[in-house]
Image (cartoon, rainbow, N blue to C red; front, side, top):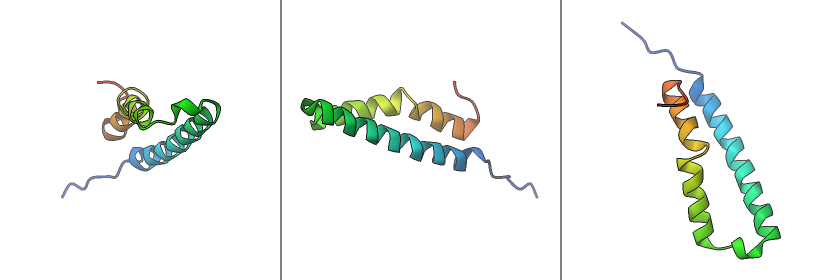
Length: 71
C-alpha cells in the first residue's frame, strides 16, 4: 500500500499566510489613520482582490499545492 507523506509546505504556508494577513491588516489600519478618505468599502474590495490575485496569495497557494512559485 502506497501511503501519501504529508507535505511540510501546507503548515508552513498557513503560518506565512497568517503573518501576511496580520501585516496587511496593520498596513491598512495605518493607511486609513493617515488618509481617512481610504475608509471606504470599495477600497477594501479592490485591495483584497489585488492581494489575492497578484501578490502574494496566488503564488503562496500555488507553492503550497505544487511546490512551484510559477506555472
